[in-house]
Image (tube, rainbow, N blue to C red; front, side, top):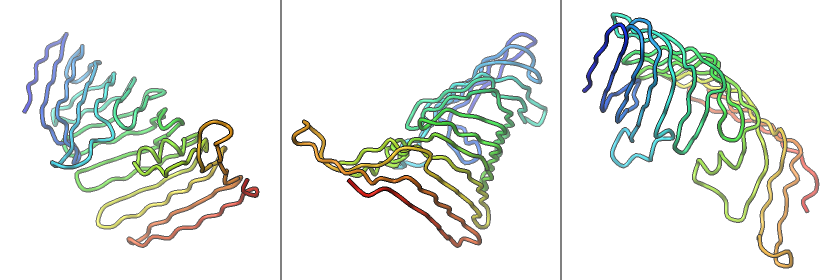
Length: 232
């Protein structure tokens, strides 16, 4: 459900329980200045799990400043001037990025995001109700942030490792994907922390880590190379 009001000076759009490209938006609010076909304004989106019992969304609240216009076919074309989110994956947009929105389609181009302790650059992301196509690169991403997000942190471990890589993903009737990941810096250690006399930690001594995962025709292949100093 929703409501729309607009004139030459002000525009306000509010929607509740709106599905956009397969995602459930609990509430979306837009307030702006200008005409419906050429305006600038603020967007606040709050999400919720798509189904009862699903885990909390990675992004719970999104706030953005937008510039663009709404066509007669309810297609919005413009750009994101700024963006921040809260939730399990906080992020911040570093520079304006191109955006298109329709009821069953979202397309984002050229978005550079500070997240997971590093930089993620989305060259292209297009999501429809049943498909997703995206490609981009990342650098300086913290391994600790990824593991914490997954909720499977090994007991007694710590890491300052940073990762970089690239991805290409296309879903539809089948999945096609390529992911490359490489260590940029840092290491991983395990053991017991505490006072110096009780602390016993062993580092893995990783100096090189490269991995590639490839999915073609729903078949997965993985290659990895690891090299390190003696454990100590």
